[in-house]
Image (spheres, helix red, strand yellow):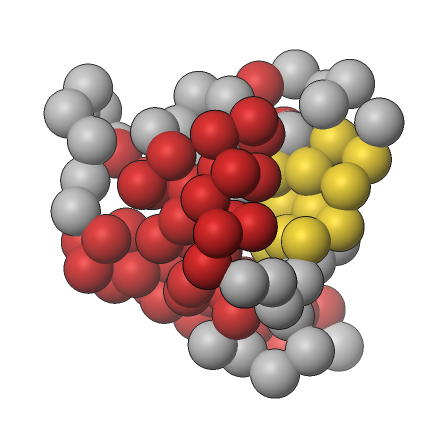
Amino acid sequence: MTYIIYRVSRPEIEKISEELCNQFTPKEFQAIYEHEMETPYSFITTDVRRPLNERIYSRFDYPITLQDIRGTSDAPLKPIEIKNVLQHQNAESASETEEDE
């Protein structure tokens, strides 16, 4: 089953994060959601049939993996740290797209 998550209320994203967070903590999932929603027309795609590292996508562009968020550490990151990691990843993805064109 595939879910597309876009702007929802705080109680809804809390429930969604508890059900679909997979390898992330609910707070990490919520931080990922908050970061993705800062971009206009953005959304998160979650496909529970895929392997763990490929379940959560930023739009349909690239997967958001546990290694992207935490690196080699097993400790969960704070929301601001997650935001910084995702901003860096978005910049790299955009530069790769520009190079392809």
